[in-house]
Image 1 (cartoon, one colour):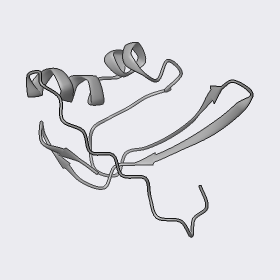
Image 2: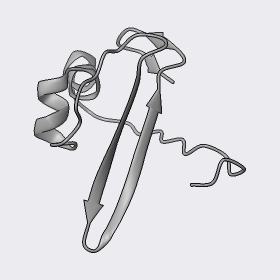
Image 3: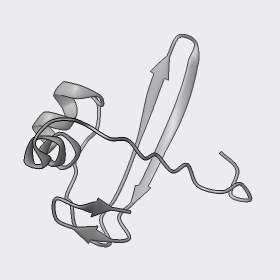
Image 4: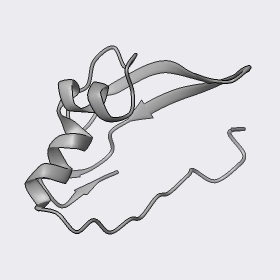
Length: 77
């Protein structure tokens, strides 16, 4: 993604308890299990930053994350 492009925003609805979804998105061991096996670390707090690559086929997708806002069990920006 180029810095001149807008950020990727994802909105989804899950029919499961909020705490279970929140943990899958914010607890490192669960994040590794569900979707990012190579994420080095994660902390659901404002200002946290991490960087890692995800490879799919012959393409590599850099992931550069910075947490801007957290409302526990409601919102992560």
